[in-house]
Image 1 (tube, rainbow, N blue to C red):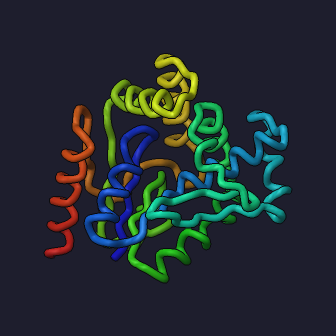
Image 2: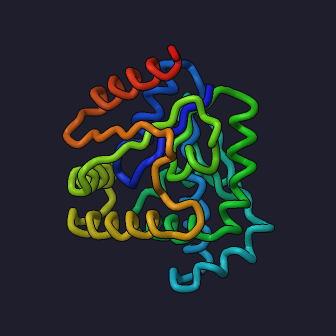
Length: 221
């Protein structure tokens, strides 16, 4: 079974995908974490956003991978667990920038598809239903009001002890939304056969329950 969860930053894709994976006993793949890891690598290399294309010449030596430890996905960059370092507003901006580069997308495409060929998965990202898994059994495009999404991300950052203001998070999120929608390569738009799920004001449980209804409806057909 292949389930694609797409949508903008802060919509709750990861929480939803994890819930679905637990419900059906399938593998959860957070594709955005891979782009964030590459964004972190670019930042560490001193590449500024205005010259983000310079990262392409370094992909041949890049080592990024996903592993599952105690049931949780962990992201590794050259063997270092960077899962706790890739969720800041700065790295979010880098992730958005590198994800617009064809070379980066090609670099990660086969990695993601290989996982889906080998096991049942639920993947979340920006272009899972349109590019990565166009043959997914179920495609959900998750959306929410931008202030609601920014609040969720702000609370997540605060819970991890990271410094950020709500307005900064909201501004960064709006910029990323625009970049993701308007990029030439794999823009963040719903697949034609995706089901739109607006979870503004929803709890994590309410979002999961609605998504399960969608999935069961699709599978039963």
